[in-house]
Image (cartoon, rainbow, N blue to C red; front, top):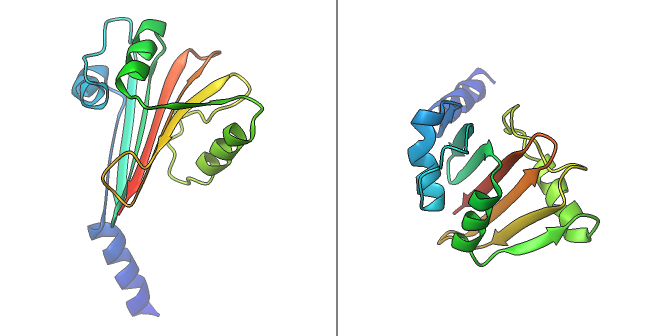
Length: 150
């Protein structure tokens, strides 16, 4: 039993990685890497957490909502599909996101203040990939969730 625990600890230590920051200045390049342009001054906050284990990666990002920035992201990240509130796909996405136990405490899952989720699946050269983007109207923050594995 002691060997099993030691192996588990070693696996978690050497086969996982993570990064988290809420420093806007340090995250400008991450924003640009994700969306293809630098965030304008209207994006006051940027938060990021990346985590990976073995053969999967999860990327969480949040930033201040700006309608022009969101429109530009949507144009650049095509093809995207829209899941509207009160349809089965919207509820399925919320259910799937709720299963993620590694979500940072600042990352708000879609709730009653979210009208639509932009999404796409299997868009990366990996076995599986998913992308979700939404804006929470009350907090005026936009959220990006990207998950992929091989």
